[in-house]
Length: 373
Image (cartoon, rainbow, N blue to C red; front, side, top):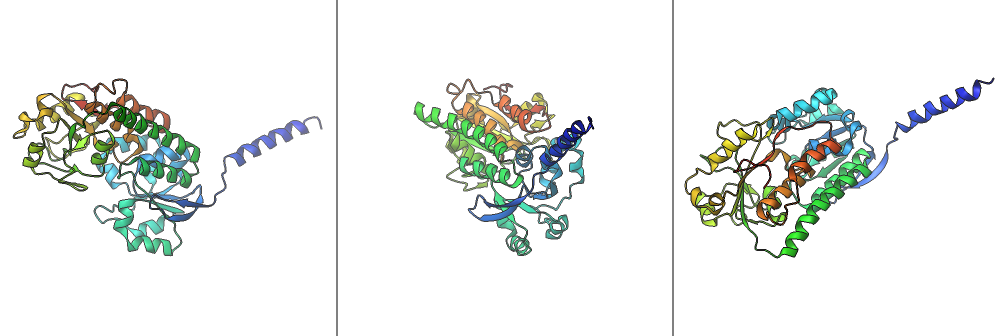
């Protein structure tokens, strides 16, 4: 009899641990970024993810990898293969998550979505709009669809999207920490610039996927364009490009940007494209960046004359992780105002706090070969 109390305490302890690991899902009304009120059993046990893979990983934490019922992973794997390989090495279960295809190339399959039997489907705003009637089909089958949006690159949408992911996964406190950190980065930048009352430097940002020979996408009011505005820049493409598209070379030359940023990925098809990211040496990124300064007429641009030309990692945009790039843009525009900021540390620090992989490579670089501005 003397062992019964000890046994009972042990059994009770084990039972308590088991119950603590089980979080019962309950109906939660989530207001997504479009203002739609959607009832979801949260934390969702089977999530189908359309986009924003790393944001989901960061918010959901360790449990999130096992709760993926399906994902649209083609874009991520194609543009950032080395990063995806790191995630699979760290979380092997990701290799078994069904791929439901991509909205971009019209391979997204509602049949594959249904076969995955999700409790909730999380779509980017642009995916939701593109799928149209297919979303209505899911909802008619009582599969809730919630919409998030980091593409807009606004503080409001970033915070709202992070909150939604937190509610879907049941990680509301973790989501709040991530959102609060992002808000602080933006607040620091905007308040210093407002206090300084400086003229806005003219800035041009281009996705350098086609190399110097051909002008590729620049951005108006979203993505890099919105980031440039948030960081206090005068985006010279804004009068000519609404969302994204190409600017005529003569328009760019006439705009005389004082700062130029060329964005790129690690996975490129052109031998002269801007290559930067995971496993890319600084020497390679620098060589590619210098190629763009040889474009016709660019030698006379203020940005090139004063060596204010920079390479930035496109893979870190459309994400709450773009806080580091916001800092970097702000430093390129106002070097004296933001000497204390360390964008590289901000970027790598996010992975250390919230994600299982540790990136190595080149993610931001100046024409002088330095990561610091």
